Image (cartoon, rainbow, N blue to C red; front, side, top):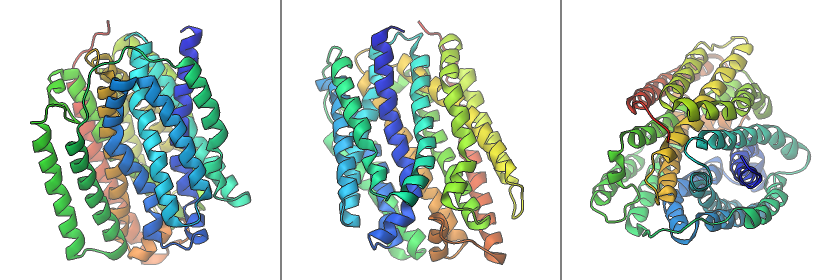
Length: 467
C-alpha cells in the first residue's frame, strides 16, 4: 500500500467513523435532547429514524451520482454536507429543526457511504480490497466505541449540542484532505431512478411511521392500514424496478452468483443483528437498572474486538475469499445471540461482556470479507452503483431491525414504560420486568432465525477466486 492509498484509506475511515459515532452518540443523548427541546418521546425518536430513512433510500442514487460526476467528488461533497448538517444540528432551537438538520446530515452520510466502496474498488486491486475494507470496518467500530464514551461525557458535563459540534473539526480536516488526495477515476454513463426513489421513500416512511405509532399508541386500525399500504408500495416498487431501464436495484446484476448472495446475506444480517444490540441495551437499562453510559460500556468488548480484528480478517478474505470467513462470522454472531438468551433477572453481568466480545469477532469476520466479495465481483464501470446497492440493502436492514426492536419491546410492556426503558429513565420491577424479558427472548429468537438465513445465503455464494 503506497502513501496515497494510505491517505485515501485514512479519509474513508474518518468518514465511516463520523457516521458511526453519530449513531451511538445520539442514542446516549436521547433523554437529554428530549427534555431540553421540550419534545415528546415519539417525536424525538425521529432524530434517529430520519437519518436511517434518508440513508436507506438515497444511498444507491448517491452512488450513481458518483458514477456520473465522479465518486471522489461526491464523497468529498458528502463530507462537507455532513459537516454543515452537524453545525445546524448543534444550533437547532427546536426538535423539528433538529430533525431537519439530521436529514441534511443523512444526505451527506449517503454520499459518503455510497461512494466509499467504489473508491476502494477504483484505488485497490481485487486481491487487496479485503484489507482496505478491513480498515474501513475499523473506522466503524472505533466510531461506535468513541460515541459511547464521548456521548456520556459530553452530554453529562458539556451539553448535548457538542455531540454534533465535535464533528466540525474532523469534517473540515477530512474534507480538505480528501480534496487534495482523493481524486476521481474515469466517469461512466449512468441514469437516476427518480420514480423508484419516490416509491421506496414512501414505502419505508409509511412502515416506519406505523411501527413508531404502534410503539407509542398500540395497535390501531390506522397504523395497521398504514403498514399494509407501505408493504403494497414495496411490492409496487419491486414491480416497477423489474421493468425500469435504470433501476435502483438492477436485478440483471444478480446473475452473478457471488454478487447476488453476498448482497442478500448483508441484508439479512443487518436486519437480524442490530435489533440484538438495542434489545440488550434495553435489558441492561430497564431490567438491570444501569445508566445508558454504563449499559453501553458493557458492550464495548465487541467494538474493541471488531476494531482489532477487522483489518486482519480483511487480509484473510483477500487470500481465501469470503465464503468460509463471512459464513463463519455470521454463525458466530448467532452464537453470541444464544449467549444473550441465557440472560435472566439476576445473571452476572460478565456474561454480557463475553457475548459482546464474541459478537465483535463475528462482525469483524463477516463485514470486511462480504463487502470485499461484493466489490470484487461488481462489473467494471458500475462500482458506484453496486456500492450504493450494498449500502442501501444494509441500511434498509438496519432500519427494519430498529423498528423490530422498539415494536417488540413496546408490545411486551406498557408503551410509555417501553419508551422510558429505551431512553434509560425507567427501571422495571416485578412482573413487568419478567414480561419484558420474555419479549426480549422472543425477539432474540427472531433475530437468530433471520441471521440463520444470512448464514445460508453467505454459504450459497460458492467458491470465490480473486484475480
